[in-house]
Length: 333
Image (cartoon, rainbow, N blue to C red; front, side, top):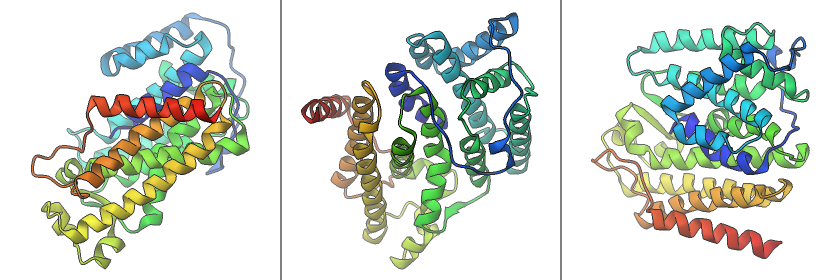
């Protein structure tokens, strides 16, 4: 499940909540480096970078382009700059025409390029758009960007596996929890109260999509279920790669699903820290992803199938989940 789809989900909240102000956790030297001041007036360069990002959206995610038009100009530019950075990182990591060594080198280059953005030395117009977003948010630290690149690096190996639940949690934060943190500056969120809930929601989304995408991931040689839990149940990586869905394997799937539900509950509790209709949209996301967990339970946690498809829910289930979310939020007010 690509990073840009996670971005789409979380942008839905931003579209209706629109605002600013958040501080991130620290990581490496780049996270503390503040940039020289940028000029904020509209210029031909700004117009060029806006058009470059719009063209990227038009090619890959036209729905996002439409959603961005519902935002005020500054918020739309900031959200679009984040999207462009995430989309291009996705394209590096998921390039089917490149070997592992090439992708690893490109990620190193992307990391150095981000460091140049930190120094206000953008390579192109889309990098400059991100630099301007960073400059417009004085309290913004940069560790989520660095952490996301680290998570992408972890996937650039053959026969990708996860050792234990702690490692899975960290990976889920790196590739999904970070997206929520990147978008929080566009929301009027309480810094201390919102951070943990934002990370929990991102991690829950990632874990549930790992469970949904078990078969497609196997086709790529990736097994994201914790190895120690599989081994404790007598399940080998080779068993999973051969799509052997034993009762023992399904027990591990159920355990990870329970952990994802706990994260959804944490995000659900924390939604009240968001302003406006933010709580409603967090609840909608929670209820939608809870439906996937219900679906997994209904099929006996057998998420391996010979067709190679991901676990899906029907449109009516999505509509019912949205209605349930609205009812919960209204009754809590």
